[in-house]
Every structure is written in structure tokens, then in C-alpha cells.
View 1: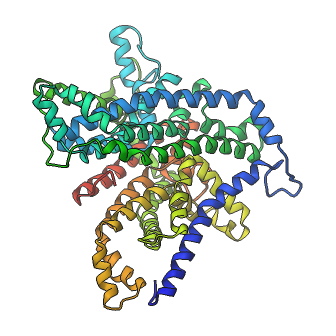
View 2: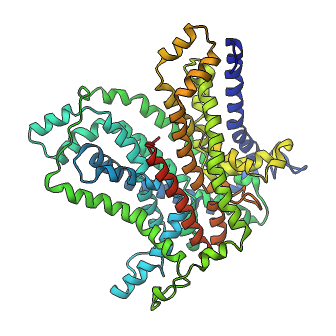
View 3: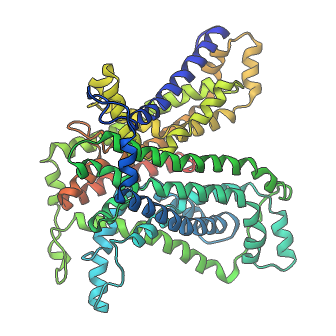
Length: 561
């Protein structure tokens, strides 16, 4: 950003073209690789459709595809009604403890899926703490954790906050006039909810349902931990195991699976955009905006509170309590007195493993430093697009959604190939730069939306005042727009820190000596049976997240961005 309009325009064009290149290059590389007979860097590789034919005829692929679709359907059926119900209770009623419940509902968004998965295993698995207690009481364990049904139910419960975020925002934007009219006419709180409030936010609910269905196809940690022992495959775990299946790196087959996932995601993203285009038609049915009057639940207040607490207990408290207890005992099982096996050895042993220490430091580094750099880059792109009505800015706004069509594990794989394909970048492949770039690209849409939303809140008259005294556009952005947005940028950094600290699947293919992060290292250690270390690492990762959340709440950051 410099001192004349021509240079600022050059900055805008250059920044947005570079953004398009970084986002689209991995996708182009994946498509190219899918039509080759072997890895792109082998000299005898040639163009062919053999990879598509192999995957098309592979029964494991179709089993993984159908399982992913089934899990996506079930988790949507669970997450949407519960998420909408929580949103209605917390935003529109006088449920007790609303101020405490609101941030708690969002906690699963920031928890690592592998931590929760390991927590469920040591708590509700065949020899889990709760399972042993249930068996001693009932004589049998009345649930089966390692199954498709369990994966779908747990995935549904842990994705409730995603629906809550959209539904609660839509409910807050509704006036309460029509609800009050229904109440005056004698309608009870539940009738008001089902016949007035929820129909008015139907497009947003459908938008969230499409999002949850898509997220079902990108599940990785949960199916790997709960499905792999029983041979249950979903698309992401099928992709992860393709190398083991053939005994050699089969990049072309991986690329075909990635193309299949993208082909599922693209129509869903287009459907979401279509739903948002028609949202205003439904919203026009609302009454005039006015101060919200909370709907009185009467005798249902405490049962409603108990329902929210039960969901939080099953989704967060039970797995976290299990994994924490597991990290402080040397053994457990039927007849074992847990108080006699308490130990801190698992935490002491962590110092004996350099890769574990590096993983903790790298996770903190990628969250604190990497998050700050990512927010800086997102801010530059947002400034380049700010109030610029050009086809290029609109194209970048659409391209920003492309990384959302790729699960984290796919994005990590694409980045690995990018560093292998572009020779000058190869030395950076085994550094934290590759991890950071993968994280930054995967969460590009989220970060850009947060910062763009902050910039839009700055009144245009302030920037016009700067221009009226002769300041060029670049100086207005540097001296007015960005300083006024500093609180929003700080909030964005805290939220990006939380996301980067809990990320795991993106780093699986980039994991190497020196570039370990906690999440991907836990996935690797779990495969070796090092449950003690995994439990201790899970607790460390949880403490980092809890510390970040406490800091965010302390500074008044809205957790929904």
C-alpha cells in the first residue's frame, strides 16, 4: 500500500492474483495427478484413465463411499434438530444460565476430534471406565462403540454447534413482534417455536443441514479411531490407507479419491449459495425489528436446562473426563482400584521423547506465530477486496470457498504434492512452512470472512474523510481502515490460534521429523498402541485450547467469529 491510486490498484491486483494461484494450484495439481499412471515426478509416467478405472472397480472405495454417505445422513439428522433446539432455547427463551450455556455450546467447535475420539474409547470402549462400571452393574455393556452407528451418533452430537451458530444468528436477527402476537393469542412456547420462529429461519437451517452433510464426508479422526479396528472405511480413511493397500505410494489413486470428494462437495456448496440467495424471501415474512422479549418457559425452564447440560455432558465432559483420568493411571480394568494406580509417570516420560516435546512446541508456535501471520495475510487480502466492486474481487470471494471442498487430510496431501512438484519450494517441504501454508489455505474462507466482516463495520464516511483531505487509497487503508479494525484483527488471531492448535488431519501427510504437531502425532502414536503418551498429549492439547478459550472470553471475543 503506497501513496498513489495506481500503486494501490497494482497492490490489489497482485495480491488477489497471488491468492488465486495459491488456492487453485493444489486443485489443478490434483486433477493432473489423477490422469497419470504413477507419481508425477517419475520419468515414465504418462496420461491414462487407469487410476479412475481401478478406483471405480474397487469394492473398498464403494464401501467407503456408502459408509460416508450413511454417516453424513445420520449426523445431519442428529445435529440439525438438536442445534436448532439449543439455538431457540438459548436465544429466545428465559432458560436458566443462558450466559454460561452460550459459550459452552461452542466448545466442541474448538476441541480436537481425535482428543474426543480417544476420550470415548477410554470411557465407553469395551474396557472403558464407564463400560466396566456398567458391566459390573448390569452384567453386560449395553452399547458397542466400534461401529458405524456409534461414529454417526458421536459425529452428530459433536457437530451440533455448527448448526447452533447459524440458527442462533438467524434467530437473533428476527423481531419478536410475531412471536409476541402468537403468545398473546394463547400459543405456548413450543407452539411458538414450531409454528412461528423456526419456519422463519428455514433457509438458514437448510443451509446448515447441507454444511453438516458435507462435513460428514470429511470426517477423519473419528472413523479412524472408532472404525478402523472393525475394518470400517470412510472416504478419508480409505484415502489414508491407499498406500498400505498397494504397498507403494499410489498418488494417482489418491488423486482420484480426492476428485470424488470434490465432486461431492461442489454441488453442495452451490446448493448452499442458492439457498442463501432465496433467504431474503423468507425473512421478509418477519415483523419489524424490536427489542426481543424472552419467551417464558414456565415449568419447562429447568428440564430445558437439564437437556442442554445432558448434551454437553455426553459430548464434551464424558470423553474429556475419561482421557484425563487415563493420563493419570498406570492401568485400569475390572477389579482395579484406580486410587492405587494413580501416577504422573506419563507426563514425566514425555520429556524422554524429543518428538513429543517438539510437537507441543510446534503446536504452540503454529497457533501463536502461524496464526498471527495467517491473520496478517488474510487482512492484506481483505483490504485488497475492501469496497472494490470488480470481477476479480468477486472471483476471489467465490474461490475462497474452494478449500472448503477439500477435507483437511486432502489439503495436506495437496500441499505435499505442491512442494514436491515445484522444485524451488522442495527444501521447505520438511519445515513448518509447509504445515502453516496448508493450515492457512484450508481455513482461508473462515479467516477472510471474519476480517472482511470487521472491515465492513467501519463506516465508509471515515475513509471518505481521509480521501477528502487528499490521502490516497493506500494511505487511507494503512492509517484509517486497519487501525480501526485492530480489535477485530486481535479477535481473529485468537480464533485462528484455537483452530490451528486443535488442527490435526491437515498435518498427517506433512508430518516428519521436526514438523510434528500434537494432533497428527497422536494419530501416529495411537497406531503404535502408545495409549499412555496419547492420553497425556490429549490433556496437554486440551489445556492449550482451554487457555485460548479463556483468553478469548476474557477479551470479550465472540466465539462465533
